[in-house]
Length: 445
Image (cartoon, rainbow, N blue to C red; front, side):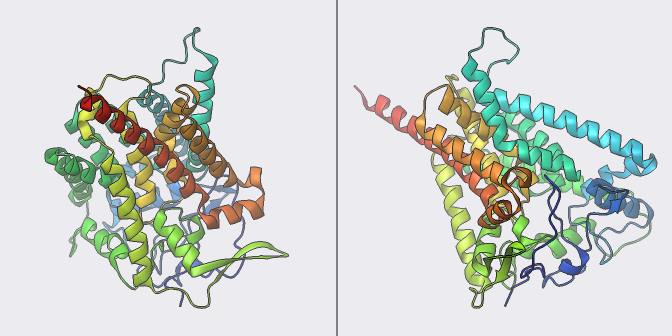
């Protein structure tokens, strides 16, 4: 049994261009054994240039504006309805202008992500002439942990840089001691893609229930707004349709973890790694690397138990060393504690998601800068080793650098997810070390 594996398994898929993730094709997706079965390709080639923003989001916005429908067997829109509403202005301008505007928005978002992430890690202004060389090295090394994923997002014109900038803006407000403002920013990001809803758990665990509820309320409220412009009458809300058809897929026992609307090799989340390694095996031949189904794979319910158990363990280990929103009260010395906590949460977001392709990992920038400053500025050897592991894993997923065979094998092994795990470990181990130091100091007479 393949439990919903795409039909690319057993053959070598056509190699994507540098930095671009496959979003599936009609042949593959029609054979998925779940409600994604009829979803077509989200990548349309026009003039040799791929634009998922045009082919998926703007197309969905046009359907919403014209017919009031989003989730039909003939479309490839698998996201909550809010982004279809947000893309409606792009249906009113020429395509070339819409692409230029979207590119400019992404440039602004990435610029903000870099600057804000560096500040979250305690980095000084890079414009100063008196900065040590190590600060520049730390900046470059930290940027390398996430640059590939940012380029990937640019190349296929997705929304990951926008949502990432919103979440990091929320982290900035949290560092400033404004958890409700932080929750509002993160809620907007969660309205685009549900992964930032993990912050509701963070706020609830650390005794901030109002902020936890605000994240979910903002996300739900924004996804109800498309109902205001839907022409005609419809039997159910768009948000309810999305939850029924897509949002609840990870809870279905018949579907193995990691199965979503793309080739499983591109799902670099923890669930994707469990599903891929358990259901497939690597084969090397004249055509290079390929995945083939295992002859006796584990059952989907057992795989879910393994995947969700590992996810729960990661989340529990992270919460055990965190202090929550009050971490902003600490006097920053080196890398602030709140920066480490935010870096860990941003690493957990794509790791715990049911589906995370490489662009989702652009938010690793905060954890990358934290690990770089710990290793290169503060002399934490453990952090330096983990930083180098994260950089190596990230670069191994770049076909232009690693070659097709190494890159495909790295994706099968989950190299992108391993880079997130390394940075998560760097943040959590530093927090644990500081907690031990605080306990020792408190115990002294």
